[in-house]
Amino acid sequence: MLKPEFVSLTQVQEYHVTFFNSAIQGAGTTSDIFLKLYGRDEVDREWWFNNLQRQLRVDGATIQFKLRTQKRLGDLSKIQVGLKAKGSSPDWLLDKVSVNFT
Image (cartoon, rainbow, N blue to C red):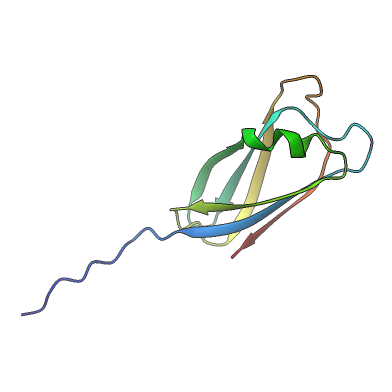
């Protein structure tokens, strides 16, 4: 008799994300920011980064972190970056974003 084999349909997908603040004076922000990943197969939730406040304030900063999602997104088709304005410097001048599957 064969024993049933259990296969997890949800596997952790890990992405390495880098935000590059512009080097222009005043480019940093005190706002809360979010990132949302859109894949060919799935769309992930909004990831809010309230704990990056100190790093996001720095003009020209490079902020790196990893995201782990349970969804199989497939090839990324787009990303969405947004913010919830707050604090003394709510505007943000983001130079670029890098998202790589690890």
